[in-house]
Image (tube, rainbow, N blue to C red; front, side):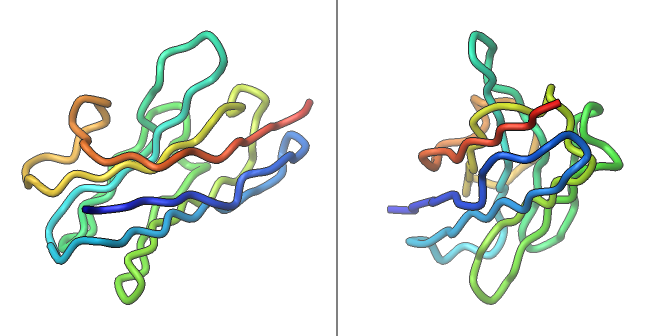
Length: 125
């Protein structure tokens, strides 16, 4: 059973940076989708960035393009999200997600089967 565990969240002032990590285990596939989502209080969970393992292709939400970078360490299957120039609107719980069925790695929540417990990001103005 695949397991995901996020870390790296915290509090930062606007303009600052954070790097989130997602440790993934319990699978052997080399071609799969992983993604970062976030959810602010009272709002729906939204896709932030996706990564296709095995190919390295990425997708970013318009709101984070140029500021966030998704990447993966192949040796450890750890997914990262480098977040720069953070804004108060980036506040929320950030979740790591994975799916091993193949296909296009889009940003819809229904695309992903496995989820981590989340890590909180707080950006103050």
